[in-house]
Image (cartoon, each protein chain N blue to C red):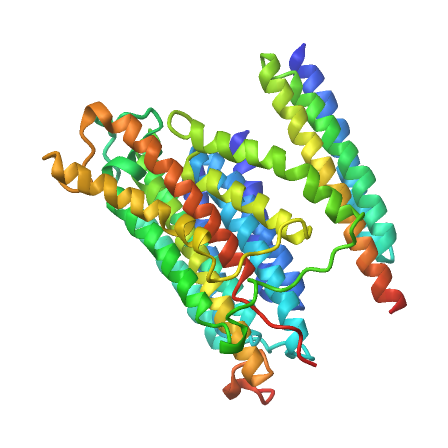
Length: 305
Length: 101
Length: 93
C-alpha cells in the first residue's frame, strides 16, 4: 500500500519537474519549482529523514521560492520584455537522457549495503543528525556557516557605488491598514516562538539551528515586507555582529577544545551537550540574519526611469 | 522495484531534467531554477543511497542539510549576478543567444 | 472506530480539494479561481485536520494540528487578498 503512495509521489515529482523546465513563462516555472520543493519534503519524510524534510521545506521550497519570486519582480522593473521561448534542443535532451541512464545504472551496480548495527558514540544530544552536524562533522558545519557569509559578501558587491549608503533591498509600498500589514503583525509572534522552539528541540528531536534559523529569517522577511521593520543599512554595526556571531562562537568552541587538550573542534564529553546548545544558538542567530540579508539583496537606489 | 529504487530513479530523472533545463533555457532565471532542480535530485539520490542500510544513516542526512543551505547561498549569489547583468545589459538572455537561434 | 472516522473525514476533505482543483482548472479568470481555491481548500484542509485528530493522542498534539490549520488559513486568506488586489490593479491599470 505504501508502495503505491511512493509511486504516486515519485510520478508527481517527475511531472512537476517537467513542468518546471518545459512550461511556458518564467513565473510558471518558479511556481512549479516551489511545488516541487514541497513534494520533495514529503519524499524526505518517506525516506525517514525528518530533519532533511524540515530543511527542504523551509529553505529549498520556501526561501528559494521567495528569492526567485522577488528576483522576478526585480527583473520586471529593469527589463521590458520577456525572452522568447526556446526551441526543443534534441542533442541536449539525448545527453540528459544518457545522464539519467548512467545514474540509474550506477544505482543498480552499487554493491549491496552492509547492515549496520553500530550506534553513534555518546555525543551529548539525542538527535543523531544534530550530533553529526555539530559534534562529529563540526568542521563541515563551520565551513558552511562561513560559506553563507561569503555568499552574502559576494551579493553585496553587486551594489552600485552610489547605492552603498541606502537600505538593503527594494523599498516596500504597503497600505498602512491593509491585509499585508495585519499579517505582518499576526505572524511574527507565532513564527518567532516556532523558530526558537525548533532550535531548542533540535537537540533531541528533529529540528535544529538551520531549520529554526530559517523560520526566524522568514519572520524577519514578513516583517520587512509588511513595512513594519525597515531593512538596515549595510554599514550598521549591530547587524554585522549578528552576522558573524555564529561562526565566531563556533570557532571559539573549537579553539577551546584545542586548549582543553581534546583537539580542535572536538567537544569533550562532559560539556558536549551544553557546548552544542550554545553553538546552536549562535548559529541560529547568524543563519537567520544572513538568510534575511541574502533574500533582501543588495541595497538599491530609487527606481530609475 | 523497492521504494528506495523508486526514489533513486526519481532523483536521477530530476538531475537529467534539470540539466536539460540548464542547457536549453534561454531566460537566465530559468537556468538558475534548473540548477536548483539538479541539486534537489542529487540530494534525493544521495539520500536514497544512505537509507539502504536498514536504519536511517545520519551522516548523509547531515551532509544533505549542509548541501541545501549551500545551494540556497549559491542561488542567492547567482540571482544577484543576474540582476546586475540585467541592469547593465538590459536583457535577461546571454548575448550569444540573442538572435532566435 | 477511530480509523473509520479518519477515513471518512479525510475522504470528505479530498472531495473538497478535488472540487477546488476543478475550479482552478476550469474557471475563466483570476477572481473566480481564487474563490474556488480558498473556499474549497480551506474547508478541505479543515476536514483532513479533523480526520488526523482521531489518530493522535494527547491534547498537545491535537492543539498543534489545529494551530497548523489556523496558520494555513491565515496565510491563505492574506495571500488571496493580495493576489486579488494585484489582479484588480492589473485589470484596471
